[in-house]
Picture 1 (cartoon, rainbow, N blue to C red):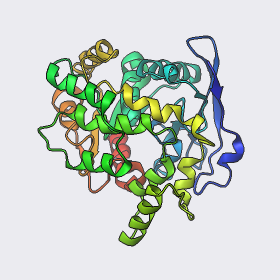
Picture 2 (cartoon, rainbow, N blue to C red):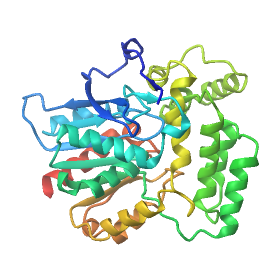
Picture 3 (cartoon, rainbow, N blue to C red):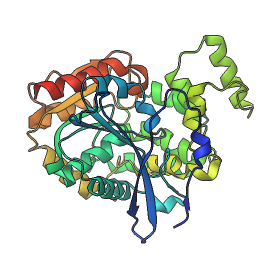
Length: 358
């Protein structure tokens, strides 16, 4: 396995990210050593409170939690925020075949065991939910409660064969969607369309753009821009011109990727979301749902009201997980997909309240 490691210099002088790095070495399936980075922040008085394990998704990294960490630590929590393999300050395997859902679960499970964390409240969003929930399944004794936001536990064994063929044909033969086409498709696709068809636009866009414009995309999704500034940035992007004035946020989300060869994780992982019955993770997802169908520890949903990708996925958790019954599930107003960036305070308050009351 060829492994890339982003030089530390690329992370210097990032805005609002003063946290010291912590590293854990694990062994990959082929015996290679992989280094996983995490943030470990405790209350200012030095006390060690309950652990909140903050799991990020694609294509971001632990920088996403910089706004939530002060809220959580000031409430007495200890925050652990790892970078998934392929992201942030963690190592980055260079080949597409190095990545899969199951390997991410295995890698992060090895990291969890190596650090011997326990008494954990999981917070997972996007891929952080898919991977984090599987960690709860595999290491239940280490977790006391769960909070999920804008994520799911996809298990779709009964998708009609016609839909499967339509999606597979789209992935294989359709022209690569532009960023604008991809965003429009996700926003405007009618509810009657299967989720897997909607998500296929994101999968195809991420894989077929070798130099995925991560900083630009995150800035457009997370920051407020005037209509004029937004139009100008999109025009420059369509012309193949890098923005002459990238924001500090765009720089931070580009920092882990010195060039396109470092982006294999963000490019490859969307294709491993198990949206179809042909997914190699189908059996593991079924077993995960069997586990959560009997999970009685507190399980809170805190979803945004305007996420075009995961909207409605909280219903399955609230209906099926026993530990979700009777809890004050939160709806984060206008939180977007990356709610940690846009609405860190109400999200943090929901986590804090759950820990204090359960």
